[in-house]
Image 1 (cartoon, rainbow, N blue to C red):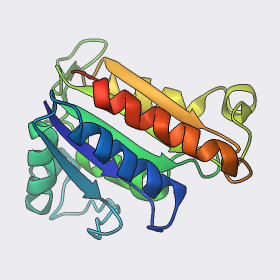
Image 2 (spheres, rainbow, N blue to C red):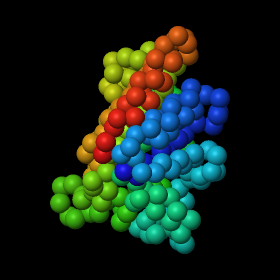
Image 3 (tube, one colour):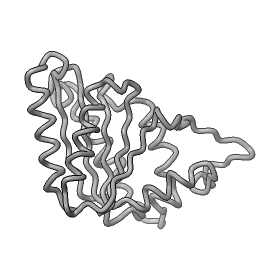
Length: 195
């Protein structure tokens, strides 16, 4: 199984980075994982800004030459893992910009003239690991799970990725004693996960 981790946090001392390390470790301990690649959006200096003009048309976005390497990694991956914090009830703008630019018509989905388009990333699975300072139930009760709806329905299932698992950890800055427990939980999951 080929695993692509899309990591989005600017601070390498963050708890999100600790989850990245444990995810990598768990995958390396899993005999079903053939290879793990990490896309660190901040470290790589990914440009999240969409530009449309006379030279760069939206309908050609799926052929943008500067994104070819990123497209190749998404095609290669059988399991895509997103690791990011929740800021203001949503993933960081850097990750949202990656989604805007990468999951383009002609690459991630194709309009067929029906009610819904055809997802072109079928057969893959995804895991979303998110950390937030606020209460764990805040997104559910005050935001109607907007973050999960965005990632699961508006993005991943739309492009054909049906199997989506969430690890969503709240109150993490005030729960120092529980951080190690959550990190171990994620590591154990990836030690045993299959496609």
